[in-house]
Image (cartoon, rainbow, N blue to C red):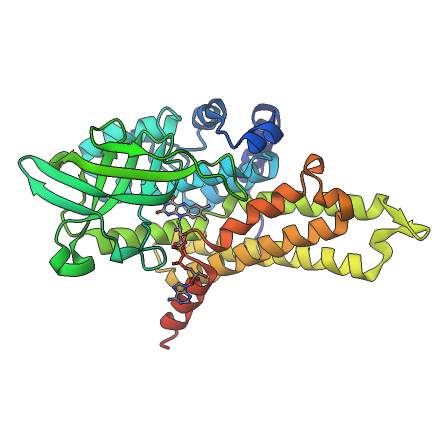
Length: 381
Ligand SMILES: Cc1cc2nc3c(=O)[nH]c(=O)nc-3n(C[C@H](O)[C@H](O)[C@H](O)COP(=O)(O)OP(=O)(O)OC[C@H]3O[C@@H](n4cnc5c(N)ncnc54)[C@H](O)[C@@H]3O)c2cc1C
């Protein structure tokens, strides 16, 4: 086991941090306030190779392994103050690009991956519905076989980047009598007839990652846009959500680091009762907890990444990592707000946004309750 980054990894980390600070950090406050998405920054992340980190070079990516990709996203999260952007990037990388890579035909990979990697396209992952959230595979969207393809009907709810997506990986049931065994995956081009989207939802945090619904009304999807074969949904969903929940918080490792550093700095310079507040044990204990939370979060994610790079089954480690990282992220942001006092509560100091941005982490990619269920199940309970 080696816990030291190589010179190449360190150089890439520093390069991405510098890129994020110079290219991505303008107007974050107003984009957050307006709940709007910065497409230029998306394109910049494509041009920088970030979106394609984990995609082989032949399909427009950088061909990195999981650990190097995690380090890249962590660096991005450290330098970039827009957590909605890093969440949107991770969502596309792990829940759209990864399944296309694994299940796509050569033609599908060549058609979609270069544009997704370059930041020319935006991809969405359409699974959740009004009646199927945690119980994702009980979805009711149908795919009815017809000449040359399928006709999709249903509504996908709370889908990241749905309002702007160019292509959506949509799960729909082609054989409802078979229950979840009938679930299949479709690459739906968002200009298709019969597909419409809702306005973005107003929401608590990660406001720059637009959340909306995809509405499918007699939407024809050609056979060549079926991902994998009909009925592959259970395995495709299980594998895809495994990547998503493993690494969706990679950017947050970096934002936690930045928040910790800010909190230490503030605790050193803010004085009350004649001394820096960091001298009060109640404050320094919070900072110690933040540091410990970050360290354990990082170790868990790196371990999952190393296991995936070795081709090992990391189901248990992934559930533990998702649960722990999302919970310490929330604790870390709460502690940062408390340490900053009233300043932590004001928009202009940009600490309260970190708290708002962290809340969704215990919901998306499977709630904390679901991760506990998975861990217990994998322990034979
Ligand atoms: C910011 C954000 C982004 C999202 N992006 C996407 C996306 O891109 N694509 C997509 O398809 N979906 C997305 N979602 C939806 C997300 O996947 C669901 O919200 C999530 O799976 C939970 O489903 P639900 O909201 O319907 O809650 P429910 O499943 O109704 O759960 C409600 C409560 O009951 C608990 N609960 C449910 N079942 C169990 C159980 N078996 N054991 C114990 N407790 C249980 C839950 O933990 C939770 O506390 C996103 C959600 C958010 C907040």
